[in-house]
Image (cartoon, rainbow, N blue to C red):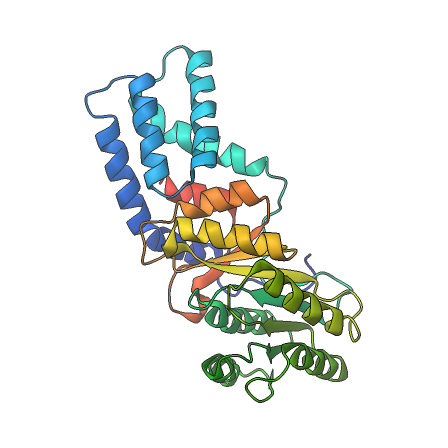
Length: 319
């Protein structure tokens, strides 16, 4: 990654957006944490039990919570005495270390790997998670980074989905390939990639149907789209991006489980974090699925979709 990497917002602006977007999550989490350690001077079994409850109810997820608690227990055992005033920094250090061990690199802004043109991202996710809006914001950011972008409206089962992506295409100023409602999604994907190749497009974003039907049906549909795309671009799609609604908390975990079981998800975008206290779900999903969280949505603006950096996220969370 890197040849075309250009950030459309500088780091200071991104940090401000991140801090602001996580405000509700932080207020909720630290309110619970303050109550959990009230009257306690050191981290003991009672504090750890309360901390476990705080993490679980903050949508970090049970498995990730148990890993965090185990790490804190090891630190307490090693250091012999840990005051409750140190707990905030301790959590920051251990969660950051845990996420770093996942062996998934943070995204390099809005860029594409060298030598892959058109670079094809197939976007999946249930209806209502902000999938098409995320595609529009990605298109804007990639265009701002100097890339030629094309959109494919392969969610042909809802007229509103096609209309929405066409509106985004007009707003951003990028071409959209579409067919009539009810058309074969694979046919739309084929036409999109054929047009992308003919027009020297750098990056293609393919929208897909947001139905979470049975696993086999979903798998068959996405497999067919992939197979047809490969007739035009042999190694497409280069990225299968799952969009999740962070405000749904544990439901986002369930959607991630179902989609990762149905297809080879290679990245994730987690949306709607600014209006929720459930931002802890990003930590759990990043830890549990070992699939890179590439982008997080922190507001309605075009530039409020930003690359996910684990260290920055944890620093902001525990600021």
